[in-house]
Length: 384
Image: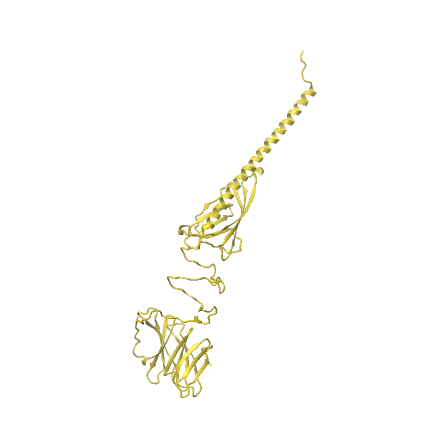
């Protein structure tokens, strides 16, 4: 007769199997957790590498990194040689936690297209995207990036987070297929007196709101030339245009002329005793100069002999006793206006020629003993 298991033996066997089964389940759960963690980490690594390589490639091929230097931002704007992809923007969609890429212009060509593609998918969340531009003159600019991603899963066992920091440098020379505009008006410079560009070539117009200095870094006038001359390399003078002033207005003949910018200012001699006239001629088209404005001086301001122009004012010198300097505001060429006059002292008569530099006007007289008189014209309405 076979003898069965006793109750105690049965309990022992069941306990052993329960412990072994629990251990197996624990090992299985651990394996599954590790597998989930490895899977989520691999997904993050894959997308992070793709993002890092894509951004580096775009930065290296860009013409310019158009963000403020030293300021952290979640949007990277690049100017590209290919007009169909200029500008290109990489930015963080903070709502959906996705990195997006926009290539090409908006209706405003300075802005990126509103149509963007996703660089990351919904399996991960982008918790941080930060760009900082570094300017390394005279080398090319670079941009550092800080990217932090986490796996998008409600399962705590699959949670994983990774962060990467790297930098890329722009390699290509800056080339643009559109306007280059500053972020703020009259705030940024191109070069300096100690860090200069070498040559410049333009096919159109150059507009300067301030002063231009040739041979000086501190021009005091609209155009200041130091240690040199402005010459015409054409050895044979050629007539290119003529403007005939209207007869009448008590005009007899032109007496003196001064040129500034696109305008010529003619001091017209009038019939005896009548006030002088200043005519403004637009000479921007040399083949067809045209009168655009005129002003008649006050009674007694006759016998004009010489005219000079400096800045927004024209200065008329009379051949009277004493000589007079009449100041005319020519800032509006179509409507010049007399603003002031100064009578010289008795004996300072027969003004022959006038020149203006800075705040002073200088005249020379046609007297027995030639006189040079300096007048302070810093206050045009009341020269002294």
